[in-house]
Amino acid sequence: MLGFAFAFIATVLHIVLCFVGAPLVTGIINKLRAWALGRRGPPLLQPYLHLARLLRKITLVPDTATDLFTFWPLGAFLALAVATMLIPGFTTGMLTADAGDYVTIIGLFALARSATMLGGLETGFGFGGAGAAREALFGIFAEGALLVLLLAFALLAQTTSVDGIATAFRTAHIGISVSLGFALAAMLAVALTETGRIPTDNPSGHLELGMVHEAMVLEYSGRLLALLDYGGMLRLLAWMNLIGTIFLPFGMAQATEIFSWPGGLALWAGKLLVMAVALSIFEVSRAKMRVFRVPEFLGAALLLGMLAGVFLFVAARIGA
Image 1 (cartoon, rainbow, N blue to C red):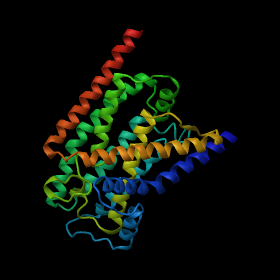
Image 2 (cartoon, one colour):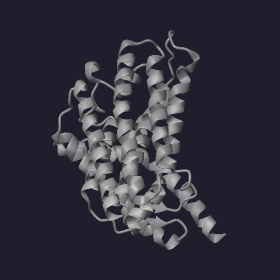
Image 3 (cartoon, rainbow, N blue to C red):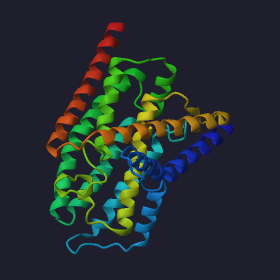
Image 4 (tube, rainbow, N blue to C red):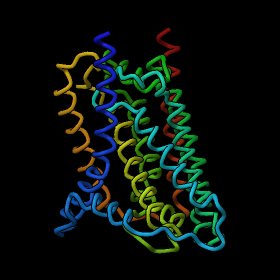
């Protein structure tokens, strides 16, 4: 009974920290990017101020939009919120561990993408349609790469649960391998595309011919735009948690052992900071690629994921 209570508290703490801290993670990345470029940069709390400003504004609905125009941002936000709750952060063994299946999380990311695409198509606006078409094309390769990576993770951990994969990687002494390196490279490429970061997209750019995500949300304003922007922050944190949980599972606390929480929280914050620094350095050192080169970029990620799965399968057969 006491273990269940601790697991419940750990789950609630994880959810609260993710929802409250997602804008802060975005603010840290923006600040680090500005420092790397020699600029002062915005305040760390600027994302909170941005969301508060949008919430105070009225929401305008185009005349050509249907009643579903206001539904798609909410649907995308809810899908990303559930995905964020299911991915472990500082601890394993939460109450959401059984529901946090790798396939389920991929489906939630795809659902959020589909809702955003349909929102971009609502008004018949040219840029919204172009952004939705590009997002659909990228999603084909991204989801394919993620599903291929599922084979590699399932072969290593003998489970498709993200919590189980983290536990297996932390306790089985798998070590560094070529297949895991391929899997990490593939997942990083997909994560950069899914979160709209350089080199596949520019989160701070507004050039119509190259926009992907921004093109789909151009017609939104007020609270609906706040939902979309907040969902984007949750998506970024969810991907950082997913990569950290699978490839950096060391130091994660046990939900039923409350005395391990401080160390788990400290290491979780450290992992997020390291990933934020790495992302900032990568973005300022790279230029955005042409839109028509992105499928090649994701195709390489798909190939790396396939190689990781094949190498693990062959190694398992030889070991047997």
